[in-house]
Image (tube, rainbow, N blue to C red; front, side, top):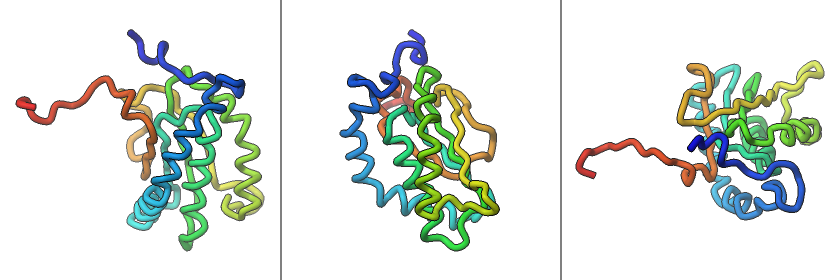
Length: 169
């Protein structure tokens, strides 16, 4: 069975879509938000790169995706001085994910960040860059040394392989 072709969330924004049926996932993400925020800030402060790379593994396609992106960007730009010169947000999910619905929401995300003053706009161009990287996280998805923070919510249940740490286990 090819996982990439068989398993996927319902795309779009219809009644049966993941976007309309992901309230439980949003609640769980909110419950650990303070830990995520603290961790990303510590990760940035420990190295202070000019360009900070973030990945969301298993990002899916609903409103939760950009809600999490907003939280992570604001954590780096509101409370840290100086904030990163650039923030690269890499969204990862299987190729069957509805990335187009995410891309259609990006103008709203950029407007929201600009309104909150957390987009790092300098000279009229945003310093937050969002990209999609489709593929299974069982294989390599990102270039070496391109990420400083990797976030994943609700992806452990997709694991079909677990590395054996002890042969007797």
